[in-house]
Length: 327
Image 1 (cartoon, rainbow, N blue to C red):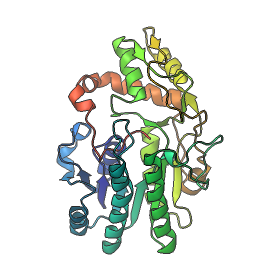
Image 2 (image 1 turned 30 degrees about the vertical axis):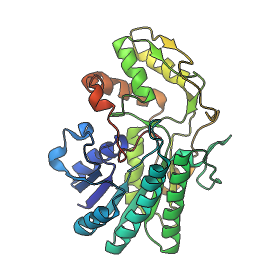
Image 3 (image 1 turned 90 degrees about the vertical axis):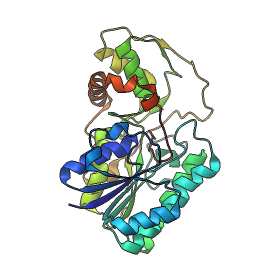
Image 4 (image 1 turned 120 degrees about the horizontal axis):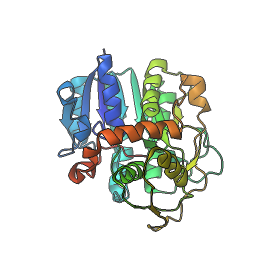
């Protein structure tokens, strides 16, 4: 039984991670911004300790860490991964400066494992599967801030020989994802027989199912590698939005109607986007167990059984700086 600190624990990935930590008997503390919706944690609120702290409030974060002395730290607090999060100063403050502060504070009290959550956006535009040792060429402030945080964590791991790691997620989807994201939008539309307004059918991502994403955090804690500190969390398979539609259509008894090119295309939309996950397989013995069809089938069933959550707009559209969004 360990004392765990999960920043961004009310967010999509964070909440799913929390629900995997609790059955193992861990004491879980969650840092989340005041007034953040806790809908993802509704069925486990009596099992966790919630700390309503702005992750950028160094003094309060420091006090919390020194009080609870977490052995395992899962850092998922983030800002800038959603289209409406455009504040440049906040992007660097939350993603980089807050990470530096959290690492430095945890160093003072000691810990067994610190896992920072990076982003596949750190790589920028690549024409081949992205490897952890590629030159980072981010093309957004969010990607730059995440890359800076990763480099700081890597420096601390190498120079000070600390168990500090970074996971780079690739387009995570699954249970409890925000209603505004691509896959929930498609699945809810299919279930409610509503036309979908989407971007280009050719846009691509490496879609990673949430169970596989959570498993890589636990694999790092179990393994505590000595010479590798950054890992991709992706399937290694690139899929288009059209692929998602096609897979969903196989599960739906109604014809899915799509209005394509309904939104303005971003000039930097990639033509290639997939992870090279060989390092995680070799070092962590981690393997993604869900291809797109398998992960979508599970997600479709879950959304169908929890459709009321995606009808409550005030709940599903709530976001904050401490919620880790799809990356």
